[in-house]
Length: 323
View 1: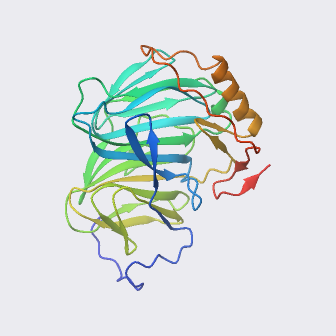
View 2: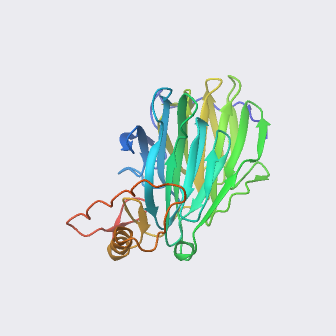
View 3: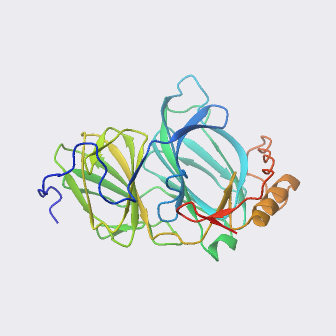
């Protein structure tokens, strides 16, 4: 397919959302992460909780950390999810309770599968690059993977190719005849798009997937809507292509997947299915059970916050309550 083919002229006034009522522009909000890092949290939000099985999107930076420690997140637990870490600038050392100690640098991918329970920490090394910029994403695990064993994988090499005005790097899933080595448990897509020229670019999409596009740097335009750095545009499902215009050098993250139909309880670092399940994970973490000890990290683990006074409710991907 020609990635720069001409399209019919837009009939909507500039800035007006497309007719698809599922399309939502999500600007995000700032959340502190550890002592020194603030992230823009783009999922979950009231307007949109998930994109496929992607249930959590944090974008951080670019931050000047030349005279600062950088990222400092001490040991903490996870259940029911995978963490997907991707850097544009900087360096982070991942340590976990399976014994892994793994630096991650730009262009490399870390995928940690919590299964029934894992603990990890994320820290910049003492000597680190002056800029920190990246994303951390969570993938909700379906039954029975969420009750399975924990795992960790580092991928230093990923599929990369040029298609018209785009340089593509495939993090997870399949795109353009390429397949990522990362193991996921539902049909899923994660790809970085780096724009090389001013012409419009088009990518094929799967109509059975829902998609979101995150602007990590630079400015982009989709469906007549401007996408500023640090914003996520939920694109909905039913599309067979994505056509965008962006400033040369812009870096975007395309997220997609089959709609995830299992209702979730998301609280603190746990993804479960019921109040009781999350409460049990919190109790195990507080008591020093289940999650193990993070390798090569002597810092005190993060204490779990108190549970809310009201019962935690499962929500579906649209935010509807269950149970």
